[in-house]
Length: 288
Image (cartoon, rainbow, N blue to C red; front, side, top):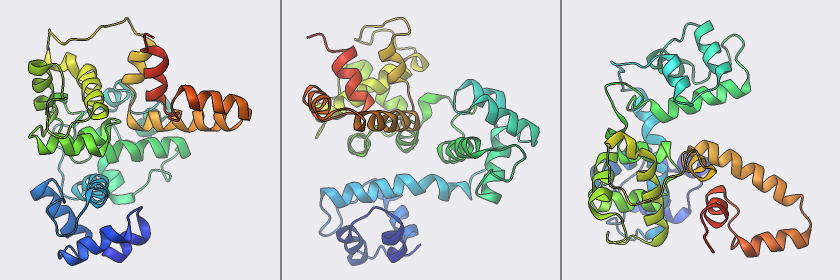
């Protein structure tokens, strides 16, 4: 994909395109290769913070789809295990079983060849979307595999699986925390991330929530947080990026149906941030 095609199809600025062009990154392959080697673009000539973030987001988006053509899944997880991990619905699982896609390897191979699942018998729009999201999430690492436990997730795979911002991902890469195991270990030893260079309060909170979610996989016994039995806040924390985006869209639709007075009251109380994470923080965990 050329720079012109990237600009036409992606939410990327002219400034970022010019940064790539002036530094010899003339297509998507060159951009991805540079990111793989450097984990950052801020050393490029005339590359500011915004262009750096835009280019990292571009790489995180396309890295897995490029890797799909190169990956071989040797320890595939069954369709039932995928369903138990709550990545797909019962309907989507039945569609896969009915069409002979009984494990992750078969699903990924089908997607590689067809780029969609809507030609499968009894596969509706929702199942098609679920299965495509599954492939985009797991194709490069087979991170659901029994041989690849969650603590080995790379920082890029965390970005796909979680609602973690590019800023936090960039922060971890900069400080040498390149996988989930390293992040959990750092939190076990320090109980916070605010001592990391360039770590603000938002990134600190995101990374602590990430550790809280995956704590059980690392068997860390001394994490400094309170636990509640299946509390609503715990459920919200464990939502995937896609699930949160769906909820945020529902919130936005309902918010737009409110009166002007109600809208203003909510905006004031939530400081203008109507996303599910902020609502959880303000209402469910706010002790004031």
